[in-house]
Image (cartoon, rainbow, N blue to C red; front, side):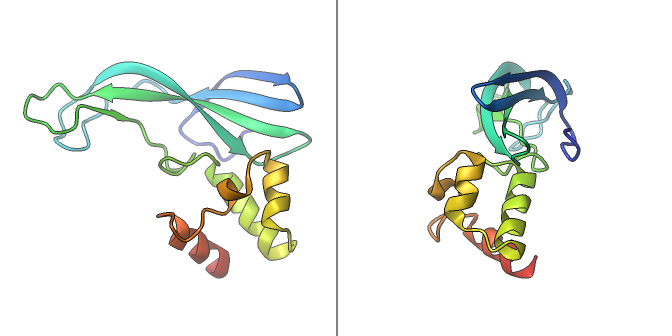
Length: 146
């Protein structure tokens, strides 16, 4: 069911209100501060809801994202969160594989952005980031180059 979601393990699966909700988290491991490299202190986890590729029903991935604190006195970065680029882009709300699926639908099936947004259960703006988004060039490159 969750092929292609490397780096996370499933904690819970729930079906309600026409949604399949899968809660995932990454395994505990020490992490260094991205600014200074000092081993960070864990501050718990926060929930991040992600839209995933629809199957028989819409799918939401609830990622229990780790939050870290840097205890180095001279470091400019006080807190930061884990990033799993194989799961979702930084600050994204659609999984990496859902982005690939959406691009495939646009290229091969001649789907509309509105239709993809409806199937994912999200908004048009979430699916099509627009030229003001930093990920716009990545989106276009993936769409045209494939």
